[in-house]
Structure formats: structure tokens, C-alpha cells
Length: 233
Image 1: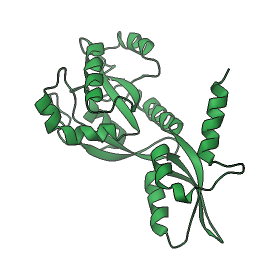
Image 2: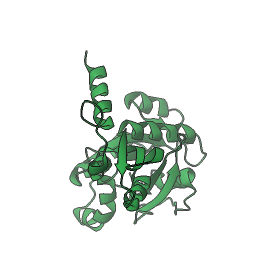
Image 3: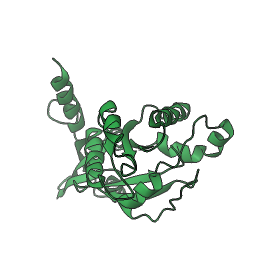
Image 4: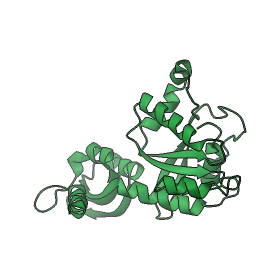
């Protein structure tokens, strides 16, 4: 939601220097910065335009290029002003816009911000939104916990896979460094062997270089199967 402290949070996480003002639509263009997570991964985090209740169609169209950043994200960090008169209504407004732009299925992490201004109401919000996180972007409270949770959520959305890249495809190895988190890299007789954590989209992008596991499938398939087996009574 607009004025929830998104830019302040981005600045706190990445020292981005993004303009953070107490007014509607202070952020009009997406700003992307690198964020180093506690587990050693580096991810890209983008500050987008805030939403408002019953966002006019003309504004949705005007901000569509900005909003498309949301639909393409691996994880949506939904920043909510915990000190607002009705945080739940603001969350509902955001979810309405997400449905309108086709981003309703993006994995979401709810972050209740401005806890320093609403110390009494935060506990209630956290209890009613399982897996949510409370922070004060202004004071810096809860930032380390938020970084850890972001890392955990992203790891659950990806798998460690094995790839073999021919030596004449250095562009692919470079792309793997951009798209995923490399675990190991070694030079063997048949090419560069890489173990990397990739999300499903990136796995499809590098499908021709994936190394099948014994018995068929890839490391990602095996991980998915193990999770499914663990969830089966």
C-alpha cells in the first residue's frame, strides 16, 4: 500500500538512497538494488509504486510497466503500515490490484512496518497472518530477521540442480551466476560442472544443460518428490 514505508525499507536493507517521503506515490518508477542475504545469496529487490484503495483504471494503465515488475517477481514482499487505521483494508486493496495485474499467485511475504508507531497492535496482526514479519524500517528493528526469512522463503522456491556446460559456452556459466546461487563449480573433461540453486523458471531456461540423476529426473525433481513424500500422511 502507498506510504507504507517501502522505500525506507529498501534503503534500510540495501543502502539504496531511494527517495522516501510521507506522501502518495513518492515512488513512480521501480528501483532495483542488490541485497546480500545471511546465507550468502545475493538477490535483486525492487521498490515499486504503492497501491491505493480503488486504484483508478487510468492509473493502473499508467503504472502498468512498474506493476509488471510485481508479476515477474519470485517473492512479493508486501509491506503493510501497522500503524494505519485499518491495515486489513489496505491489504485487501493490494490483493485486489494484484489480481487485476495477474500477480495473485506470486509467493507473498507480509511485512508489518512501523512497529515503533504501533507497538500494541502488531501482535494481533502477526497472530492473524501466519508467517508474517514485523519491522521498523525507520529504527532498524527486525531487519535481520526479515533478511533471514526472505532467504528461507526463496530457498523453498528453488532447488539445487547439477549442470554440465560445454567449455565454449562461457555465456551460459555467466548467466548461471546471474540467475541463481552457485554452490560448486569445477572443470572436468566434458565441460564445466556446476551445482546451482535455481528456481523453476531458471531450471527451464537451462534445461538442456541439466544433468539427469540416476534413475531419471534432475536434482530438482528429486527434491520436489522428497517434499511431496514428506507431506503425504
